[in-house]
Structures are given as C-alpha cells and as structure tokens.
Length: 332
Image 1 (tube, rainbow, N blue to C red):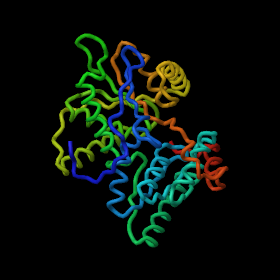
Image 2 (image 1 turned 120 degrees about the vertical axis):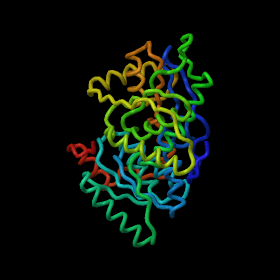
Image 3 (image 1 turned 90 degrees about the vertical axis):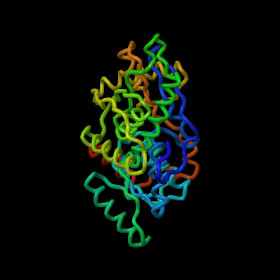
Image 4 (image 1 turned 90 degrees about the horizontal axis):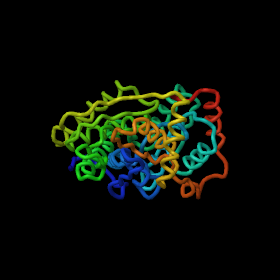
C-alpha cells in the first residue's frame, strides 16, 4: 500500500518468521537492516525521511543506552541527517558504556542531561542553537518517532498480515492456524500501535500485548487516533476493526524468569541474545497452547562496527549522566 509521505529505505525486505516452539513464532526484526537493525528501523524510515525533506536536522532524546537514540544517530549520519541528541541518565553497565561511546561517535552533537528536568532545558538550548545558527527548524522527535514513527509499525503490521495470511505463521493446529496474540516490549508501545493498525488494515483483528514499562495506554490511544488521521489525510483506505491493545508490567523477578526461559528456548533455535526478545518469548511460553507471535526486537545488535572510530573511554559529560542514573535519576 502506497502512502504519500516522505520515507527512506533502511529495511532490506520483509523480516522472516521463525518457529521456536510448537505454538510460538518470532518475527526476526534483528534482521531488518545490515547495520544496527532492529524494530526501531521501521520508525526511522519515516522519521528520517521527514527530516531530510524539512532541512536535515533531528532533535531527539532518550536514555544513553537506548537503541532508539543510537539508531537515530547511526542511520541519520549515513543518510546525511544531522542528529542533535539529548542523552538521559541510564544504568552504568558495560553494554551501556559501549552504547555511549558509539553515540558520541555517530551523533552530530550531544546535549547530555542529568535528569528529565535538565533534559527539557537542554532541548530548548539545542533547538535555539540549530534555529539561530542553522536558520531552519530541526525535526523534533519523541523517542519511538511519534506519529511518523507509528507509521513504521503500521507498515510492519501490513507485512505481518500478508505473512500470516500466506500461511507462514501457521500454528500447526488444524483449522486454527491464525495466531491469537502479538507480543512487543513495553518500550516499543508506539510501534505496537502501528502493528495493530497494520494488521487490521491487512484484514486481521489480533490482540496486541505490550510487556514491560513504557508509554501509558492513554498516550498510545492518542497515537492511534493521530495515525488514523494521518492515513486518511494521505489517501490510505479506512481500516477494519482493530484488536485490543493490552499491557502487562511484570515484577523484576517475573521479567527475569521469563527472560531466562525465553532465551534458553531462543538459543536452542539459534537466535541472537536479546533481553527484550527473551522476555517476550518467556511470557508467551507461559501459555504454550495459545498460538502467538513475538517480535524479536533486535536490541542485542553487534557494537563492534559502530565503535571503529569511537573514543576508547566514555566522555566525561556522558559519565555524569551514568552516575546520575545510578543515583536513581533514570527516566521512567
């Protein structure tokens, strides 16, 4: 389905489905793009396309270790988009430190903030700097891409609907081959909204479950309404009835148990390490007789290619953010 909005191409094609249990299929979003892929690339196709059309600057924010922030910087640099990033506090772990070094290497400029309140101030400073020195307005993008980012999930939902209806996700039960639930991580709530809409437009009303902390359901419902308005404004057909959007926020102990169980099954199937993917798989395996699809989000991407030109240590300004995160200033 064609929609008249700017978009760049990051995905190499439809991401494959892979069965890892009798009633559980995963959608391999880790294979979405050759460099730093993942489900977030779907949102970036539309966010960066819009940025290139409006002048070439993006202003966004996120935790230092978030795949979103680094994905914007990496793919933005490759496309000639100047990314102004506001890193927010995060846990101080070896993986997050690698992300911080890569972010410093790929972003046009960083505006580190030690708290959400400081992040708002830094956002105003970054906006003024680009507006006054560059002479044009940067594209301000919420983590996940806002309504433009949801379009990425919508395109993914259309793709998944076609795969399901062609029999690629057959649950192996006579007469009941359609999946009865799609699972995504809580932080990808905006993408989940898009997947739900795309599935509906493709003819499937499937419940979508987001697992873990993320944007509140009221915010996601507002994104859904904005997506509908955007689609109608740009010539997309009216969709069919959407499935329910549900949320579960497990305790830390529950999430860890699901992650261990899910990754054990995923390793047997040859999947790469992915904490969120493992948690979703483990949650799905709690109901082994229910046909389900879990998004394998691709949050464990190899970092070595991104660190080739990076500093050997985390810059001092980003270390301050990590220390703030250890003191409990991480965004919720």
